[in-house]
Length: 435
Ligand SMILES: *Cc1c(COP(=O)(O)O)cnc(C)c1O
Image 1: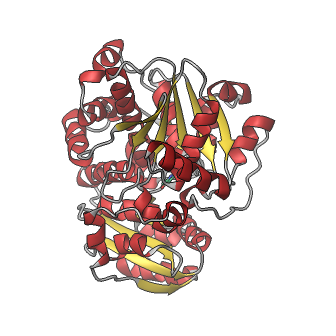
Image 2: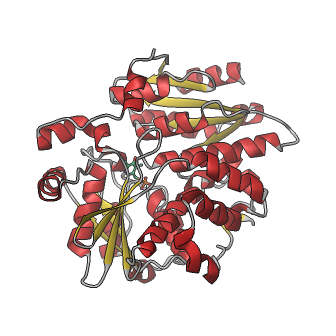
Image 3: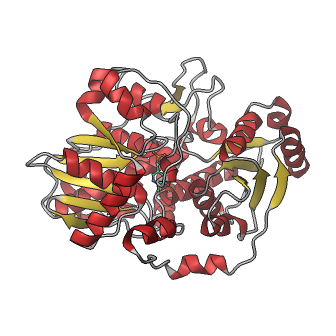
């Protein structure tokens, strides 16, 4: 399989190049030239397959030309070793709980699979260079990436985060690990961290000296494994006779998660419709209703992992539908909610159905509840454990959700970060000394 850039100005790339570089040289995002379609017999028996079995088969369809099948199955078994259950909430609305991984958010899936795929490419490389993964984070990405890559041979990870602006539990998850994980506290904002990382990817001196790649959803090795749980969700719905007219709602920020869902659909997954749920950062919803795409400045909300004003995967969604607004609108609906609506949703669903949503899942539940039609089965993606947002949840329901034991353990460990000014030359110097 070859990969093209959504800007169409870069040569086709191999999977190895696409995942070890992250972004195409023309700054576009890589996409598979054609998407494999899963066979009818796969869907016929899917309800009998486990998550690692499904992931192994889908991964083989996507990556099998470039990574040996046994290796893909092994990576699937070792990285997807936690539950992703479908849970009934009310009427015909179900929650796909994506938060049972090590850092309690859906990004664990992509980050863990990506780490092992990169490790495969390092191991089989003739140059044998270490790959350096740079990740700017406002909290969740850093913890998922750091935990996913911890101890993986041939890879060094640098997590840049805005000093004093991430929650204590998030900070503990990427500053206490050591080994191949280095945390860098920047005296600045998340946008400053992101700008430093972006600048590093285009700096010639740095790129000549060391291999740099990104671990956010612009990287295909993180994005494509997110298709696995859509197939797994479908298998569970089918097992319970709920697979007809399936409408899936995805709480969206950078639109990597829903892009993976749409890719799964193009690979044959029988989904009727999608919904993109937004917080007040609603550029995509506005695109759906007007046909015009105007990125805007980020608005802070209580569903902060979705605070994105210019979603990077928009280009991929456009390409999946040949740039046609009508074609996108025929499959994807959108709806946005402000902080107050999010709080009311968390409170109502908790009191009426005894199900505790996190602020991101609450946007998705609310959109699905509003847009689900009679005769449809609704599934929303619950992307984080409510305990990750304990302040917000406590202010809504009057008590703190219980933090799972294994997360509490991070809080007792020693935090270690390198402090740095918001200055590219210092960052560059630091990396060059390491590499
Ligand atoms: C990252 C994140 C999202 C948004 O996912 P995208 O792929 O960026 O659209 C939603 N919820 C949570 C909890 C997240 O961490």
